[in-house]
Image 1 (spheres, rainbow, N blue to C red):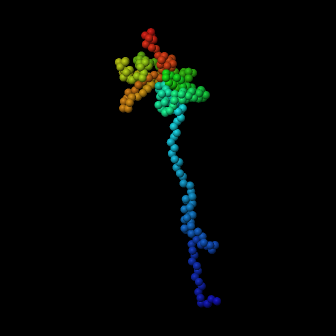
Image 2: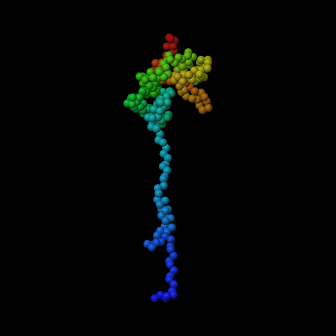
Image 3: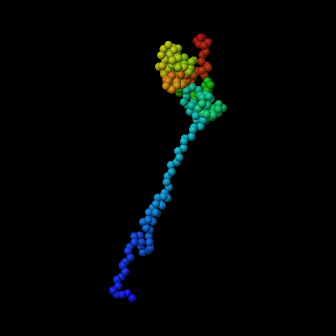
Amino acid sequence: MAHPDALPPPPEPDVPGETSAGPGPTNADALCQATWQVDAEPVPVAAPEVAPAAPPPLRIVEAMLFVGGPPLTAVRIGELVRGLTPEQFTQAIDALNHDYRRQGRPYAIQPQGQGFVLALRPRYRSVVERLYGGPRAARLSPAAIDVLALVAYRQPATKQEIDSLRGAESGALLRQLVRRGLLAVLQRGEAGQREVTYGTTARFLELFGLKSLDDLPRTQDLQQI
């Protein structure tokens, strides 16, 4: 029996996080839980850089033909695509022409000299004449025709060679013929030099009705004109 003068025991101090139902999570538990949740989130990983694959040889051949210039030969493409044989080059030409026919393209790969060029089909050549004009519409001056003839017979020819043969400045005429698509720059000089060489184009052959440069009049033919 309790003594009447005895004091009641002091109340238990409240402990944070505890209820009558039992102990709850402490601050340390909450921190650990938050840390676990952060670590559980996926961390994005940057994908490794992959170098672009080189274009297949077929597309390289097509690109070189599209660029134009002198006829593309098996020797020239072999320098650009290591290991490409002349037989594979011919197969690429046949495959491209097959695709062009199947797709109804207005152009085809045609033999010219020792190589091949990308040219319009005959039925579409009138488009070129409308755009650039035929031989008469071009209205080349006698001096421009002289320069064109000299380049045709001596190509690849430099400006200095043409100037020496004509005895006159030919720079403006050469640039005019390049703009008209009758001449093309074939090869530039070495680094630090501005020397260039010129040659005729497929358009030159078309406008003058030539299949190749072998059809140019020879010396005997010129003496009869």
